Length: 364
Image (tube, rainbow, N blue to C red; front, side, top):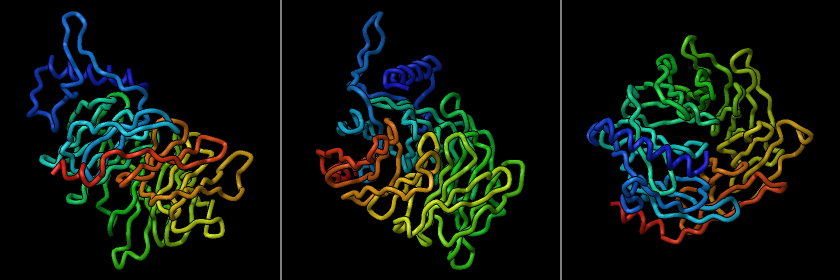
């Protein structure tokens, strides 16, 4: 969806709230777009200042604000922070069309429809309160939300259309600490890594579905990354302790695990992992580098390629643009972006004009 459509959707929601006389007290965060960016004129409706193409949004953990990235991969700049969300947790969807936010005051989960100058919030009815973990599906249509305080987990589907809580998953039979989580696009299979109750020196990955008991599908000394392939019930798993990336196949049937990279492939304590949109490649954070692993096609089975980053990668957040990922979320001087959509992968940097510490101080 292009930025203009996002703006129209946001304004449409705002108009809907006004017409329904929904008070701000009924919303976790007020449905709003910055007043300074809008003006009403008889017969013309609201006008919004469009800043140009939007590469995406990221949530700055230091300042606790959503910030837009203007431009395209290879030529981008950081925009002014959007209005404060007062959110304890914000997760931006891979599609960059929306984000999910948990209110610090009420624990209410809301869907934020994003545009380049603001956001509109829609609370998700019947969602559990106080969620502290969110796992988005690869195509952004579904999300798994989890509250460690109550050990309750829910699946929200229709996030790219009409969002609704579709059901609750039973984690009660899973002992030990909850680690990485992932959800397929259909929203009917969740993968959950559980640490051993004693020592947490090993983890078991379970497939959890609403109408069947959890089933163990893989066991490892650690699970540092877990992600479903787009439109598939296959998933990728990385283990930092074992220096291994595994392809978990046929999770909904007879699961199998295929090693696709290890220490001999150049892995160094791999953390997060993601798949390309067509499922032909895996992208893995490995130390201060990003490895690309061919899963299918003519390069399948070949040695992974590596791109070094003069940064400390902490995330693999998909941006708009072919296989573009944000690698950092609170850099002191610049934001690092991995561009895997070209013949030779590369790392690009987006300048940060305002010191992060100053931003953090502004929000206290």
